[in-house]
Image (cartoon, rainbow, N blue to C red; front, top):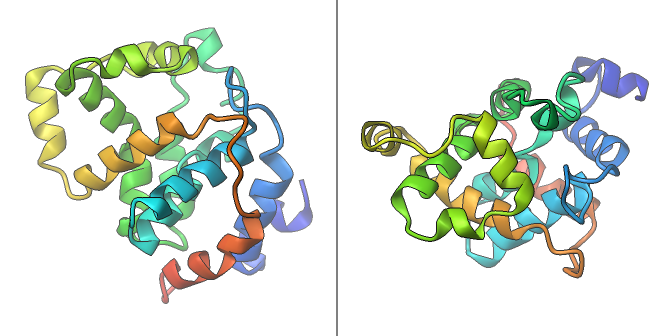
Length: 193
């Protein structure tokens, strides 16, 4: 890891995030056929194609950053452990981004649990890796959990993000370069960061 990745407070936030994704995102995304970076880029592109706001596109791009910044995350689901990458990632990003970015990141796992409960056939469309992670993340929501989740701010954005997340695993999909998302990330930074 570079010096700037070791000390994110000493560098430009967007430089830091792009560097982190470029440097640590080259490993395969769990058991999927794409890398972490490819998955992030595909998710952001799907959000753009759906007409999502800049903040939600940024959330789509950054939703799995918790996998990259938590050394205890690697292989966690294979060991039956939930490393709470969504919570780790949202907390990591909160130093630079507001809730329009961090809340969908924090809730995208809950959104998977919600969709498995609320939408017939959703569970059947999950990848093998998503099924494995769902088991350690608590499984599908109950009726009460689903109702509570949908009452949260940014729940609908998290559900949209989760749908793109599941689709963003295509080894054939072309995407723009990571650097192409720099202006969008700069637009979505909290100005008090």
